[in-house]
Image 1 (cartoon, rainbow, N blue to C red):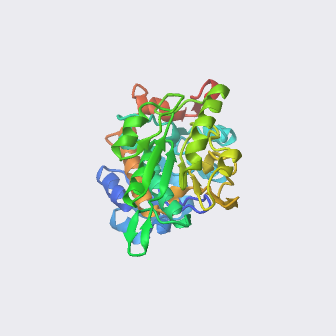
Image 2 (image 1 turned 135 degrees about the horizontal axis):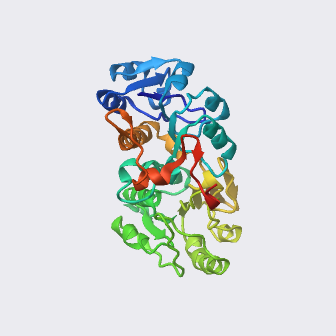
Image 3 (image 1 turned 45 degrees about the horizontal axis):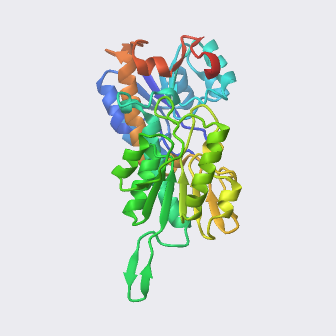
Length: 369
């Protein structure tokens, strides 16, 4: 079978779906790997690296028209779908909740599509969980962005010129990204505080040395995510968080709800209570943002508070992000093949959850579609 990777067309994307090390692993298993010329340059992987790993470096049309399995990061665009081989397998993020036209075109191609955002967030699925691997990168980078934008230093310093107090960093949403943000802030010397509405997050936050703010509302959802709050719960949370946000020098938000707009957590009146020079890094900006004032992709200042909603954060650390994504993808190929041929077993939870089209048949039901 031919496994293909092509350049990502998404603006500002520097990652690549497979790195040479994983290409070598797949070639040893008997797959032919086709790589579009120059597709790894943004991550500092060059065509000669792929050739040394056993890949065939070709033009775009040759790759996409020959790939039995196409691995991508971002959803296929319509012009890419038109060139796709009939009955190909596509493994990528799909944003299925807003890309139904593209999914129908993929179905017309009799394609089989695996949506990476639907991989269960379970211990068993960690070896293919790209959301977690990329969130690790995003959480790390979010803290560095905050440190760069903040007008103060993170660590406490005692010098002949006096003592500087450590920065107070509050992370809202203690998933993979939140934990990495907390751990990075801790390494930089900040005082770290954590908030989450999932009870399981308390011990996770404490494990990296954070003080956990006991939530007045708990809302554990499915798949490791929080469920949406009721209007009454939102009011209770607002009153609780407003004080803590106002006392923070840096707030990093990471809260997401799969397939929906990110929950609104920080309102304008909360921002108005923050000190001038405080910083908000909104990691949910790709899905609308957790802060009412966030403008995705922009840095703004509101009453002296710096608010930044960076987009596609893992792409800003492209080499390790690509390496982690690639490892997950090579593992995913192992999951859906046997002896070099497709072996899609829907009794396997990961396959059943992530496959949204099988041989042209849509597999989503109800609200999923």
